[in-house]
Image (cartoon, rainbow, N blue to C red; front, side, top):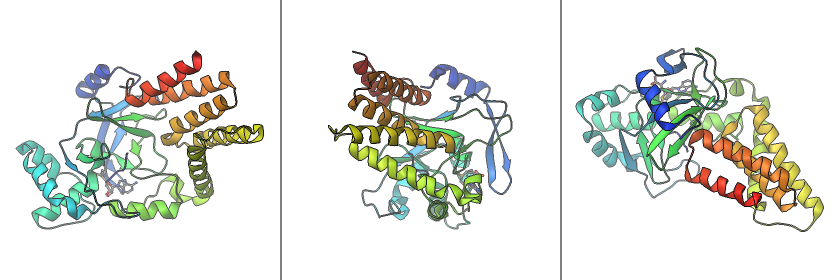
Length: 306
Ligand SMILES: C[S@@+](CC[C@H](N)C(=O)[O-])C[C@H]1O[C@@H](n2cnc3c(N)ncnc32)[C@H](O)[C@@H]1O
């Protein structure tokens, strides 16, 4: 189940273009089953798919360390969700990929769900039949966003994508070593062969970025009077931004821009704080123009301006 956890183009335009003239094709992706490919060059921030769930089910309340929740606890809700679909939707659901062969109605429904579902808010997980054709990469070119406001999942490019390039997204948290990522991907029944997995030379950097995120997260609400510590936090946040940009891992960029803004603000560097806050806002608005997160970032920026 992928863990994700109004775009720059207006929502209406994105939806219209998606319905009448999709920017992607679905076709075989060697070694991966089907995949989604860019029909032509796509600029960063292009919405690829905006989709509502065919059905969704509540997440079990019981969680297990390192694995999340147990899918077996969801079978009754999955069966009920499936039964709520129209005949065409049922056919689409049954045509989705199964990461291993299964027999018996319950097992088939469950395997399809595990292979294809995305978490929505913190309480539900859903099936998005078109989005489900997008394969995973540990260095993806696409971000995904759950819009609480429209109750749709938005997939949009995080960088320019070439014509015919495969659209990829991450199913898992990315700031982990190759071994940890592969272990996590076992639940989907494949071994990732993306450029990051072929050479594990980026492992140390991913762990450093993860440590930096944890450190900055912790320190953002503990301002210090010591100038040297203020400067250290600024430099750690700017280093984090630089590393994320260099590694092509935009999933964490809005957060890193925010830290750079906060620590500059705490050091009294308001001009720099505003620049970072603007980058945070631009990043969030790529996903959805007026999400709660984007509005909060806008308010933060406005406060810095007064
Ligand atoms: C959500 S589906 C993605 C679409 C799928 N390829 C299809 O044919 O419908 C997830 C499944 O696709 C395959 N897959 C996704 N990303 C892959 C990758 N990077 N390498 C190999 N297989 C992958 C795995 O079988 C995985 O269980």
